[in-house]
Length: 150
Image (cartoon, rainbow, N blue to C red):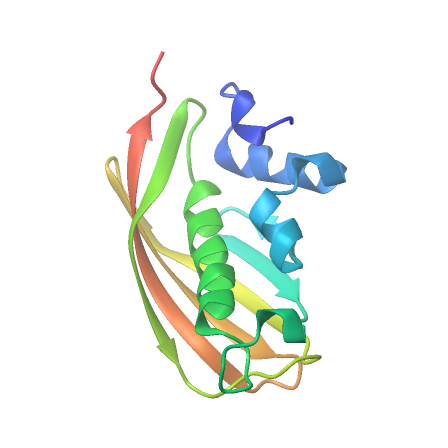
């Protein structure tokens, strides 16, 4: 399977823009959980999805893990969009706050933005909102920024 990280000659935002060129570059987790990146620019990444009953928890609402995964993708890709060619990253921690229950069939938009990216760490935040503006969850994240190993 092709991987956008197979192009270390490109900046982070250029790598992410490649994801728009074909389904084969979509992250497998996004395909499995049925959400997708719809916008990317330096310092900002936007995802959209509509959860189904397949991601419900035992109490009859969307599992927090689904929301946390979308939030993590938005936070991480916001940091990724700021990387220079030859850099990689990994999420060190993510703090998620659930503001209200989410149910199947509610389309959501998750906007991740960079707070700061330095030589070794990137900090970002994300908001998971319904298209009507209702806030479902928020997150903050810290990513480790590294040079890609040779």
